[in-house]
Amino acid sequence: MPEVLRAPLVVEFPFTRSLGPVQSAFLTGLRERVVLGVRTGDGRTLVPPVEYDPVTAEEIRDLVEVAPTGTVTTWAWNHEPRRGQPLDTPFAWALVRLDGADTPLLHALDAPGPAAVRTGMRVRIRWAAERTGAITDIACFEPYEGGAGQPTGHTGAFDEPLSGIVAPARLDYTYSPGRAQSAYIHALSEQRTVGERCPSCRKVYVPPRGACPTCGVATAEQVEVGPRGTVTTFCIVNIKAKNLDIEVPYVYAHIALDGADLALHARIGGVPYDQVRMGLRVEPVWTEGARYPDHYRPAGEPDADYDTYKELL
Image (cartoon, rainbow, N blue to C red):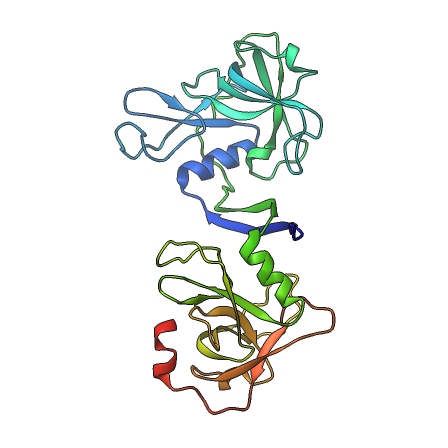
């Protein structure tokens, strides 16, 4: 049985967004140890606040402060905290309805164990020592035996309100390519490119997916394609990517390998970026020990006629 391939992968990027007046007030309030909700037309107080009533869709901007104390409405125990979660020791995820609010807020509850957590228990906010205007300014909730806390009477107006935030997004996962793409990857390690032919429409797909995306039938017949191909479309990259040691500008292109009926993505090198064009004939450039081409370069052949690749655009 062939080796089952697996690889740990990470997708990570900073997500930047602007804040409207309601979210700006809410996050700025957290920075100042104030929890703000928004009051709807029928008198409900929503925390976290939203800019439109979820029932009537009317715009709402009537800010109202609620207490830093509240009641657990439901919870789940987290035995193994993950990277970036609020606490690095086991804790409960809890929905907490703060005193004065009509909706619950999801956050971490610091407790010694699941036996110490119950629906209906009283809790209060534990503020972070350093606050920047983010939900993490609430470090967590903690058990609390007292009565309802008292709001400070804040109106929601701040001298230096936040106008935007940067939220890091990250996804860690393990990828297993399956039979078809495993064969494709193994062939690349031998500096060959293989696809699979559909038994119905006879098109050859690279990389193979194990099934024809047009006919929906399984594919199994392997076909070696390339190594040369034709640039069908391309773009010029002018923004340098983090952790990618390639000077800008450079070209990233769709390349239809000879014998393939689907273009794949690859970088174009060995030619000035402003000389890359549709129809340019290219060939792969391999580096020692690599399991895929580093880039494609001009093959020194005449440009391909448009009619030979127009269906692959």
